[in-house]
Image (cartoon, rainbow, N blue to C red; front, side, top):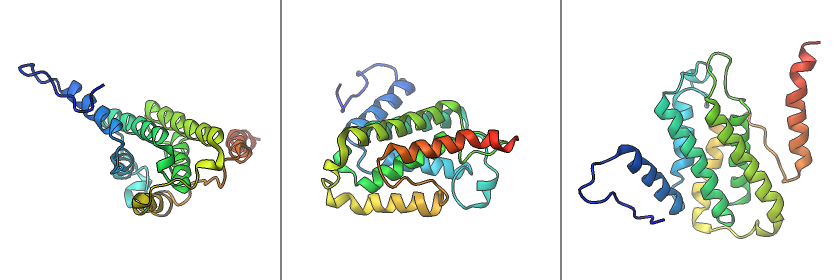
Length: 195
C-alpha cells in the first residue's frame, strides 16, 4: 500500500475512493496530530453527547455521513494506537480506552437519541483491543514514551476527563478484575431496579 496514493491521471474523481485513500494515508502516517481522536470528540460534543454544554442534555441525531466519519475515526484511533503502542503514555492509552468503553456502552446516550450501533460497536471493539494489548504487553513498555508528545497527550487526556466526560469510569490498572466487576454491575443494575 502506498501512503502517497493519488488517483490515476485522467481518471474521473471518485469522492469515496479519495476519502478512503485519505483516511488510509492518515492511519499509515501515524496521525501525529491526533485528528482521529479529536474529530470524534468534537463531533460528539457538537451533537451534545459529550461535554457540559446546554446541548449535552439534548443531543441531536447524527447524519449518515457523520456516522460513517465517526466509525472511520474510531477504527483509525484503534489502528494508530495499536501499531504505535509504545509511543503513547500509559495514562493516555488507558484514558482513550476508558473513553471508548463508556461511549460504546452508551453511558453518554439518552433515551431519546442513541449513538449509531456501528459506531458504538467500533468503540467497544477498540476498547477491547486496548485491554487485550495491555494484558499481553504487561507493564514493561510503560516507560518508553516520546517526550515531545507528552503535552498533546496530556491536553487530550485532560480534555476527556475534565471537560467532556468528568463522570467517566476510570480503571487504574490493566487488571481485568476491575473491568469485570464494573461490567457485572452494569449488567445486574437493570434487573435489580425492576425488583
